[in-house]
Each structure stands twice: as C-alpha cells, then as structure tokens.
Amino acid sequence: MTNGLSGPRKQFLDVLRVLATCAVVLMHVLTGATDVTDASIVPEYRSLLLSVMDLVTWCVPIFLLISGYLFLNPERTLTYPVMIKKYCRRIALAILLFGVPYAASELVVTERTFRIRMIPEALKMTLTGHTWSHMWYLYLILFLYLITPLLKKVLRVLPVWGVAAVMAVIFLGSSVAPFLNKVLDVNSIPVLPDGGVYFLYYLCGYFFAVREVCVDKGRNVWLTAAVAVLALGMILSRTLAGFSIQMAYNYPFTVLLAVLLFAAGWNGSIKKHRIPWQEAGALSFAVYLVHPVYVNLLYKFVKITPFTVLEQCGVQSVAAGQAVLILLLAAFCLVVLALATATAWVLRKIPVLRKFVL
Image (cartoon, rainbow, N blue to C red; front, top):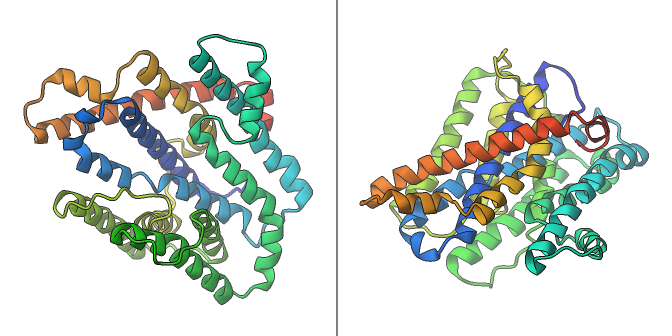
C-alpha cells in the first residue's frame, strides 16, 4: 500500500511493508502445504515448521502498526467523508473484486461445474466474510478505518498515560491471559476477546507516531539485537525444550517481536539503497491479494508441495531433511512471490485498478 505521506523518514515503512508481505507469502506457502499434505509426513519436522511460523507471524501485526502510525498520526486530519470515500471505498472494492471470484472458484471446485447463480451466491459469501481465508485482513482493516475518525477524536483528549493504560489492559487480557490458559491447559484465567490485540497493534502505531524519531545508531543496534535474541529464544524453546504451542497473532511473543521490529525500523537511519523500496511497497497490497492463487495452483492443481518434493528426495536423516525442507520452503516462497509480483505489476498498469483499488 502507498502510505500517503512523503519524506525520507517514511522509507522504513516501505521496507517493513515489503518484508511483511514476503513473510505473509512464506506463511501461506507453509500453511498451505500442511493443509494438503498427509499428516504422516510432517511429525518429525513439526519443531522446524513451528519455528518458521514463529518467525513470520509478525507480518500482519506489522501491517496494523503501519496503518496506526499513518492514520492515527495527530498531525494528519482525517474526516469521515475522506476516510470513507478514499480509504474505505478502496478496501471495499478490493473485497468485491477479489473476494467474489475467489468465493466463486470454491463453488466451482466443490460442484465441479459453473452455474450463473454461483455469482450471486459468491457475492453473498463475500459479503458475509466466507471467501478465501487471507481476505479476513481486509474486513479487519475496513472496520479499523471506519472507526479511525472517531478514535482520533478520543486520542486528542485522552492523556498519553490513559492510552498506555488501555493498551496494557488489552495486552494482558487479549494476549497474556489467553497464552497462559493455553500453556497451563486451563480456562480459569479471565480473557478479553482475541480480536482486541489487533486494536492494540493499531494503537502501538499511534504511539510511534506521536514520538519524535531520534536517529540513534547505538539504540538501533540494541533493538536489532533484542529481535535476534527473542527469535533465537523461541527457536531454542522449540528444539531444546520441546515447546509445542503454535504462536498466534495475539500471543506475547508475536506482540513483542512485531513491536521490536517496527521500533528497529522506525529508529534506524535512512540511507539510499539500490533496492527501490517505494516501488516494491506500492506492489505489496496487490501481492497480498493475488499470491494465494499461485499457492493453490501449485498445491491443489499441479499437486506439488515442499513435502512431496522432500519425499521424492529420499533424504535419510531428519537433520538433512530439515535442511532440505528449509531450502524447499524458500524456493516455493520465491516462486510464488515472483509470480504474484509480476501479476501485481500488470494489475497496477490498469489505470482504474491503480487509482481506486491497488
């Protein structure tokens, strides 16, 4: 997505946006493969697969942090007419233009035929949120966009400590408490709705927006080190301690990792890079929308996944299998990413799509 703000300070947003999009693609390459693979192939690689998931679940939280940073910025005025006509309309059109064909494709695959009445059925499915699973994020961001003008009014009168208190309550109730219930295998700890954590990420973006960016290379090194230590700790807990709970968007590890990653980018110095981050960032939204098409084509029609290739390799040891599986996941991710990026580039060449949707 374009960020709507100019200036060299915002380059880090494009960097984070591109990296988060790549992480989304890797996540769906992995989850898509496990969904269509015989479970008997997967168990010995469960620790590895969970570690990979741990290291990419920050992707959606980063998108929300970026949105909060941009839209809740006190220096930016956003009225309901502007929010609805420009931003909400864009998301709504994306839901319809992509969600309806995706829903219709599910009907065609299920019934193995096409009927004209499938079109209104697919429209109804899309309006009720029953299209391809990755589209859920668009319904979420549409809701956040709708409440943004009202939220900005509240934030103008609410002191910073009050916002921090609200965020602390959400973090404890929507992140820490559900995680403890899962770890302890109990349901006795009171929790807030899991969806509250998405509101938390949005507010975290606001906190970064109200602070002056202090370019401190030393601090950036410490933030980057904290990210590395947190990620390494999670991996070691998998491999050495046998921790088997899959991380979710609302669990504390994911929250901390996403915030630290955003802070590392936010606090980093801006340099000129050979990578055209702004151009790549502009393609991110379209890549997000279309990449599952290629995941499904590879897995459900070509019927090739990282696991089927691994099985054909005849690897003898688990350690060797893990190394090969990492390479295969990376290769499949690059293929899907390349195809989705090429498709996104073509779609953005269509003026009406570029102006109103992408």
